[in-house]
Image 1 (cartoon, rainbow, N blue to C red):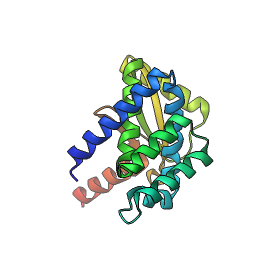
Image 2: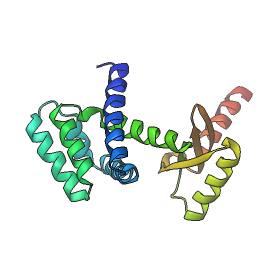
Image 3: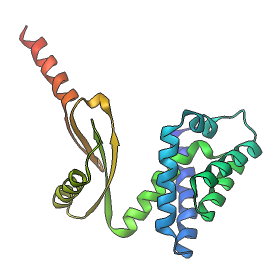
Length: 184
């Protein structure tokens, strides 16, 4: 399936979930559930395989996803949504659905989401300082999506919309290597 088609599927499903969550005054609860689910997917190769497996039947995927949602303590609305997504064989697009929902929620609040990758886990004060600095630059509230990428060696990579600032040690070393090749 093309990325355009999967993007359209993700948008449709996330819009429906957003509308239901808004009607039930559960926007924040569903957002928290989706962030938890995103973390579970990132941490588990088995869960990623479950989400993308064409071998498992609809019923098997639905039962497995419902069990995972129950163990994770997700809300009833989120569990029902995941069951529907599994029943319709759309679990392979769940990452896009999560991003689309969180993007829709941020837009409703007038927030911008910044993806931040750091070589080591950032402290609460560092995250707060980074959020404050980005708010000054962007001019609106900024929600940080912080991940740890040890391959960066040091520093940060910050993406806000189409803008990216790469202040990682890995990139600086790559630039230095290119310069050194040019000198020799």
